[in-house]
Length: 303
Length: 239
Image (tube, rainbow over all chains, first blue to last red; front, top):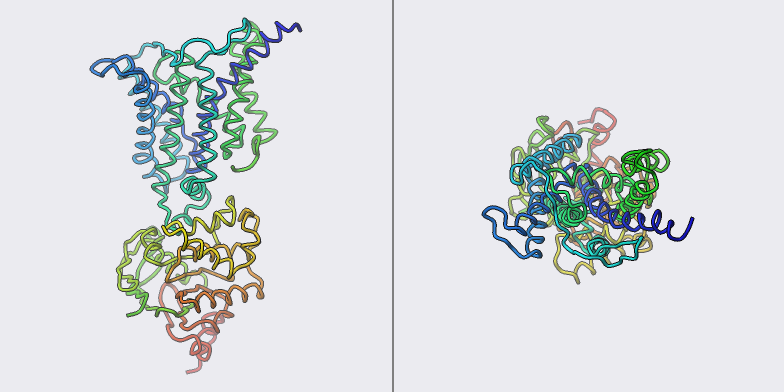
């Protein structure tokens, strides 16, 4: 294999997979956080990001009666909208079901997902449009390998949020309280921790992570349609979470990157004529292999 | 006025009533022990006092303040703390983090550090293992941690559910001795127990049966009365 072919077929997909996987990792981080806190899988996680993306684009373009705001303000409003939707989901759907079987709560989050897609469809219209990239231009463009500024931004955001998450959970009392509630909610109540407030905080953080991931991912894939983020990113994010062991926050981030690279390499190396949608097939195979060979995940412990 | 006054307390689980209206009082600075067979309502009583179960009827007053209907958070802030049945330590957190979280309701950092040293004084083993995950501790150490965590809120009334459950007789004795020291330092204590080895440390003894209180008297009287033999062995008591 020549250096040029190696760069084109292996290195370039690995770089783009790394970037795409960083977003999966961010979404996976939110999924793991909610699993640790409520022991549920949140079907609406990626669509919280979808809400952020639509709110961002509505304010960025001044849609309808909305004002045309500078991009940073529109992005901020998008992220805030995702946090708000996550908090409302916690207060109106999850909290009333605190004592219900977990499967009921999981199904309820699927209901939230459908509602969000319907609202997006109502506000945006049924036809697909496009999201612009927040950061235009290329950081690296050496023929075979191309890294966009948007891609660099994604990796930087992932790195910063990872460090902040690590500091939050290891240093801050609220981070420790989230872990305590996830492990023994009764004991948490007994020392005076408000389990309800911690639950709201956890959902707020998950909404924030989804909002950031949604806006970055929307700007990368371009496709703007109700439910598109769930269709494109929920299963990879779930796979990332499983790869990391479902309860490990660093595991979700590493898992996201691994999944992104596997998906991208499969797309590049397996010709479409032989296996259409090879990236998604590889993703499912990877998920099955992890569940069969190492069900505890890559890191294999709760962190 | 007693530190804790319970009048006609009723509670239960879902629609199932457990406590049928019990009344008792605990004086400040004393140790009260609650005996009873499984299902008598001992744990239900202290879980209700700690705010984990709703008060269906009756009244709970702590230092004259009405506690009925208040949240677990408000109750721990008022000065009641519970080391629950089954220890319920945070297995994935270190011993130190468990103790720090025990002081969640407190705002004074310096005082918290002092209480931490006090806990390490009671249970030196916890200081030796402060960086170890709580889930890796032995049953006895986890019991020490559960009691230490409850002390971290600096309660005026410490409640301990089944302090000796699953412990060797020697370790159970050690735990009772430490609880006695905690009491000597001014904290009022309520212990729920099946182990009669705690009786020498009891100023007050209560016996529960089927959600009612059948005995409320001094520990030494209880030892003499043979009421415990009737409760646990079903023997008739000579009148």
